Length: 460
Image (cartoon, rainbow, N blue to C red; front, top):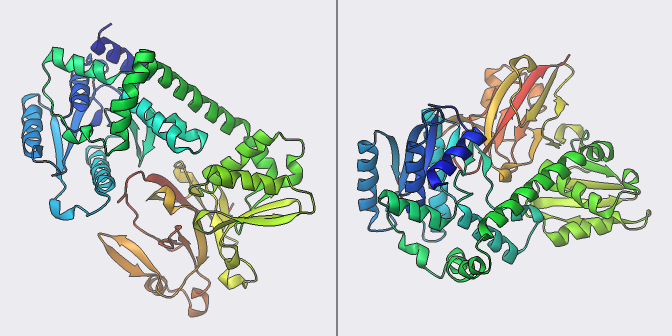
């Protein structure tokens, strides 16, 4: 079966989009993305989407002028919609240029998705990219989940990224392009051995492929099995999470260690990962830190102790309770008016006797209450609720801000009540909402943002 027929079968089987639906295709003019573009354009009408080409001229190489001219002509000749952006040289940083280029690129892709009404961004990552990524993760070390490598689909802002070429190898794509007479441009930086991925690509990959030509499908199979296993574990430990963990006290998360009696060490470890990484979004929890938390749990019943994590997080063992909180010194001995609490996602909180709110990862029906969407990165979490502070400001869009005090004046909130007004803030302290009064305008200015939905409603 040739590449086009295999591609047609995969697209039909996966059902990623409906015929005629707009999809945004990230194109660099390299062989991978130009082949993806050709394959999409030659899909049968029953599964062919409307193609929107998204191209960025990073102005990093002299040949980018030729590449820009080529993709412009290509799209014109083939009747494809082209959205393009230029990253001016004056905006290039002195260091970290690769990360900055990626940030610019994905911010542009998000804008194109929004402009075209598409919820699919297609990239040309292929099987070799996947294997290289897995090898890099193995060498660096880390949590097991990192070995899933490049996933076939993942959320991106309010859309999703799809990588339809993962089942295919680089050589398959190159051979297909040569047979079909597809023109592409080579990026000479892909040969620079100062880059880790290039060293693996040129030095390690040929040896592994020579050892077993089925390397790519085997690694793809392993990563898919790993994804399935991780999702199964997440589902199976939910009952234990609900029975052993108290999220209702927003000041802190408390694990009842008596509920973990007789639970295997490996399951407790999975529960901790669920709480630390998925629920509380604590960044960069290392294997050593996870082991240290497990040691706290497995000590004598009368033991007490504490452990510091990243970003101000702390784990404390207090007899048969394990308490996880952010900057606990902020929560001890404070009067009610200064009280701060952390917001756990997908849970309701009482704002006062009459109203409630929650921040949810999925959109709720209108009947649940007023909904506001915020686009946030993982580093913006967790969110907190606190009393207002002098100087608090609220983004109102287009780079403009309004003082929270002005919001209160406009809402005619009495002076004696203003200090008791609650605001929702992100992990950096940026005000997202003056709860019950006004919400910030928060769009995606960074890569890898996700939508979160603030729901405010009357208590029933």
